[in-house]
Length: 364
Image 1 (cartoon, rainbow, N blue to C red):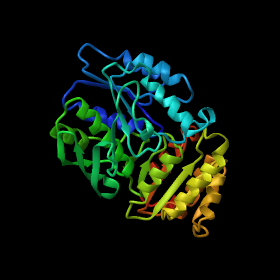
Image 2 (cartoon, rainbow, N blue to C red; image 1 turned 90 degrees about the vertical axis):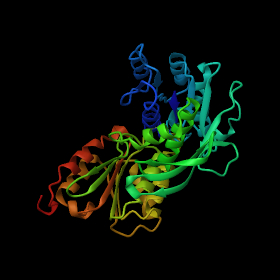
Image 3 (cartoon, rainbow, N blue to C red; image 1 turned 180 degrees about the horizontal axis):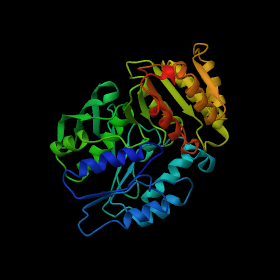
Image 4 (cartoon, helix red, strand yellow; image 1 turned 90 degrees about the horizontal axis):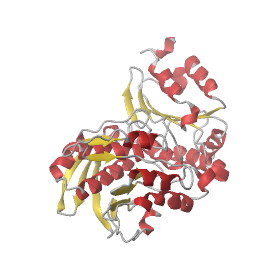
């Protein structure tokens, strides 16, 4: 069972890909991670299934308890405790409490894999008599799986030295998805695989075969530009991770960012925070879309973004009209574009508009 504020789907894909090197694996498809999707996933288990990798998502207290009762996980993985669904869960401590319901039906001989880099998860020193197995980037003696000597290949991934119990000297892996957050997700997969007896050779092979999930950091090479399609969902932590990823591009950089939903009473502050982060990340053009993103716009402007290089569009329609009329102003030829917002913003329409751009947008 896999949960967390961000990275659930990518971690699910990484774990399933690695385990497939040894087992017959069933995994959650698409976004079937709620109280409808999880039972549909479980009903696909067949006699020949040797491992089921189940993504579990929630938005309120009690939901994870019910999901855990269905899944009865043998291994629980939590990626992080971020700032999603704060409208109902109120705080990161509330999110930790709600996510921790995944342990309610953990098997007696079950195991737990947690992100050591997360300040909330590292406090879980023991859960129902189980000592968690921690993964991270080094520097904490509690870690069993360590990802270090990270060599970025830009938008094309990272080469990493992984260390785990039984292989303390380490082994190098290529992670074909870029960003520090993907290195941590891969470390979660290594931690899980190690619990299930996979050797370094199988882990390395499984990680190298991963491809992005549509809408979750998918890299699209288009005639006019390169698009980082991360429009499936958004919260402050995932926004900052995506902007960090965009900053790796060796081209001009455009960020098209939309409203983040369900952030509760601190929504204004979180949107301003993302705007400031975007300005500090060296992004050439920042396009903020939606009512709440007006605060993102102000955050970017307050931190020295050059005049004329940050815009606010009150609606998605206004953005799409601007892209059609003056594409060069916002998406110069050869640039890299990040497209990210909460799912309800319908930013798949932005990705489709970019795909529709002809090779010479100047004559649209």
